Amino acid sequence: MTLLHAHDYGGEGPQLVLLHGYGRSHADWDAAAPLLTAHHRVLALDHPGHGRSPGISPWTMPDVLRHITDTLDAQGVPEAVVVGHSLGGLVAVEYARAHPDRARAAVNLDGFWWGGSYPGAERVSEMLLASAGVIAPAEYIEGQVAHSARLGIPAARAEAAARAAARPLPDGTWQTLPERAAARGILGELHRLGALGVTPWLDGIEAPLLLVQAGRSLPSAPGMEWFSAFNTRFAGEVADDLAVLGDTRPTIGVHRIDATHLMHVEAPEAVTTLVTDFVRSLPG
Image 1 (spheres, helix red, strand yellow):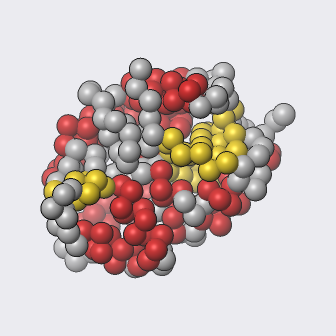
Image 2 (spheres, rainbow, N blue to C red):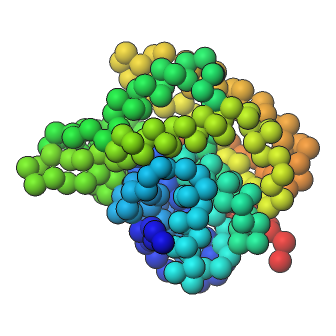
């Protein structure tokens, strides 16, 4: 049995389980989680190979879902609303599919992916793999803080999240996570799910879903204009699919938020309001 690192933020009320994105950790929730505890008990997990959780090999969705279930059992959590960002959003939806008896509902915060044959997908995969598991220089954290400042994220919040998502090494450098083998597994799973397309991917899920899309694009970095164009094109296609789903599937709620992809770190109050209102609207 593999137990994942769990951080209990406390609180009283309906149980929430929070999941983070690729290359991040539970610390991304440090601003939003205390706001959520006003109405919920809140537990956050680190994915396998991220943060303080052990790695797994191979990194597959069925194994990840099993480790989440084992961890929640160990934490005394038989049922929860699962809330995930990015990679965590896809995992939250898959958890609701696999465990309808345990997932009261799922919230997916900008967790949408493209199939491996989507134009530009191979280039994105190469970029992510090239950066996976590298040893970053001592000034890595400062660079992460500077990047986050472009999104309006306070320095202290950005620094804490960056430190929690990497492993400090004795010489002052940083081991970035996930490492390459895990990254390959994660990307394979993401491309497998993304190849279905948003609408077919969500078929067969009975639990209520809240699907939240970022309303603003990430600022374009020099030399990365191609990636901004890629994201803009894909986000438009996702928005079209979500509009139809929101109109035709009564168990699916759709929302766009005035924030970029890292919405729960950038705009924790807005995300908290969305999640709290959604849980309050659930039957029972």
